[in-house]
Image 1 (cartoon, rainbow, N blue to C red):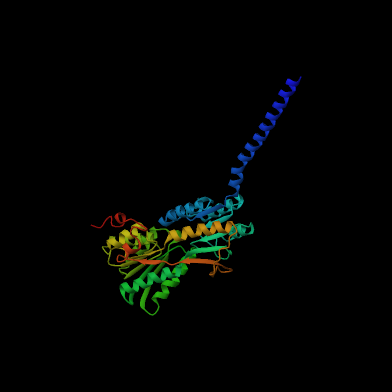
Image 2 (cartoon, rainbow, N blue to C red):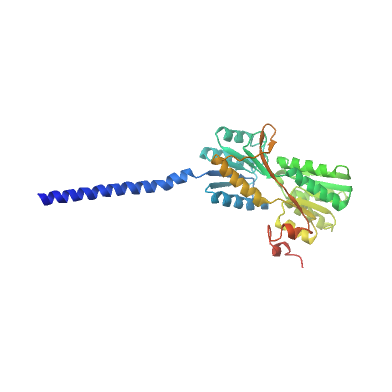
Length: 344
């Protein structure tokens, strides 16, 4: 009987230890799930990837956010504002901590952004304003300065008189109006005439060709063409080349796309405005994660979105020409062998 009782006691102890072990395993299995729920969730809705810079900025943003322990759900609206509204609605339903938006049409997004704010979701207007919404942050470049740099270069290039045609960006992009304001400021007190101006709905690059061709068909040749971005500039230059005018007209753009830098060293595009997108994307990611974690941003500057004064961060753009290409771009933003690919 004593032997049996001893065996029973031993078995009881073993089973007890086994149960404790089982309990420990269960807790260990739960911890990663709790950790996953604790991760900051960011929804990133981008206009489209037709513009070269957005692909680069997506990668920079996601990399920085993940480095900070966050997860990013990237959605591409392909230039369709209704699709972008659905994406933002999806982020709201999913309960993400922060929604970052590169807006297609800021006015059209007003209702869904207001809905996100009411749900307690933080909203970042990335590069483009979200008007009348009271976004938690507007982080961009000094867009008025972009226009000033374009205008100042044209004045330097053609002097204080001459004709300019403008192929602007999308009228639903608030940055376009800010760029225009800076451009007109730079031309103030000159006799330069804006002889023709068109918007490019949806930033459609082909409009650069169509509008330039339309103007040239009148028999007039402009002294300069101000293009809303480098994609539009590329198409404007194709229209000029068809009339053997490539390199004879001062064409300016913005974004410092690789092909624009190639055209500049080749001599068909005169200038582009470089915007250090690494700085923009990485700072936006850091601030989005900080907001989600309740860390104060301590931003002193504000800008009015039409209805509210919201926190504003604006980085400085830089004019890039053939003369300063190597100083600003080569080896930092694009590689030398790529920029000078077509130059002997």
